[in-house]
Figure 1 (cartoon, rainbow, N blue to C red):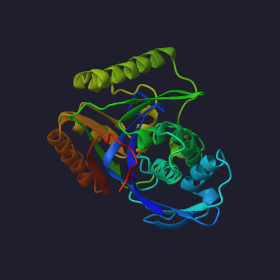
Figure 2: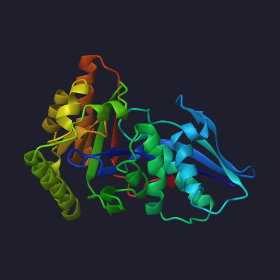
Figure 3: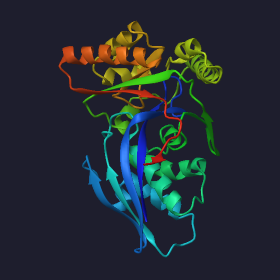
Length: 306
């Protein structure tokens, strides 16, 4: 018995929501096959498209799966996982989250869904802990739930899913440099000024309000990062130029996707999103820097069976 899954890419932080906000992309993602087998435990039998460890305890999907199985009565069967990577590691669009979310979703399906999608987030977070040293949920939550997600609290875990306005599109450009999440975290300050914090809280509230009221202009005004982007943007080639170009071509807002180096822009309508993609491409063409680009609707479903 086996199922084949689409495990979507995600954009985390969304400028103002460091570690608490994320969204799910529609057409960028990995594929995964999860099968039930007689041999107990979890084994990763195949990885195509990336040089990642097959050892269960060293792979994010294996760690997430084991975290989930630990909470269940001992099973007299096990699982095999095949991973077909299309999201590059260190790209800033949730490569590890796609693997972690896919593994727990697939096993949950084969077990007859003992857990809800929301319950699965806590297990997928253990994969993120292996990848970055921090069990954050801002990628795995949208990967599992679809739409936008807000992590109101980590202890206890409290996640709110928010529907996306119908015409909202994301454009994401990935300059082909790898930026490890752990390295991108190392440049952050542990303390922020009260003035910066107040500005950030206002923007998080504004963004959430904009999503609920489908107010595209408010969404755009709220996509501002006072705290993290000024420190991380220096690690990304051409960041200021890409962001400026996105605005000039109609973006509502633009910023770093996750820990980078990918840069996202949100826009109203596919035509604008594609125009932004072309303009972003031109910047990296002129810089002679290889890149990948995605234009995507917001995926309302999260991980899905193919």
